[in-house]
Length: 160
Image (cartoon, rainbow, N blue to C red; front, side, top):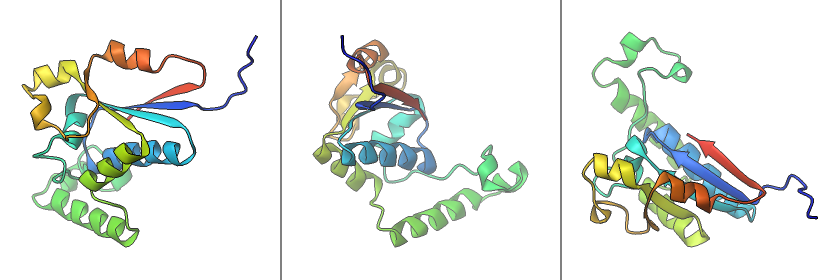
């Protein structure tokens, strides 16, 4: 009988929102898993699809409304220009740390073996095709297919 020693063997990350902070959290976790020798797969669903949409992936924003970590009142966060200002500030800080842009990060993850999947239901709901998406995605799959890919001992699933 095989005993499970608690070792993480695979990270299955579901990205449902394409705010800049959520996208980078998912990307850093997936890339970090690969750097540690852990398999990683990303499933982009609902608004998370914007992180792999060719026309949108380099135009993601920081969420200033409904984000308690911003430490600004919701009314202030909704003022014109606040989201753009917060996004610009975050991108400048990321550049200082040599964190790559979204498309370059996708290329890096793909090269390291991270598998990228688009959600079939969300693609249909938003009338998107594979041609609309980043060329490196592994395919368009159902949530059930994604779960099957995560089968096995040592797999962890994370929803962002």
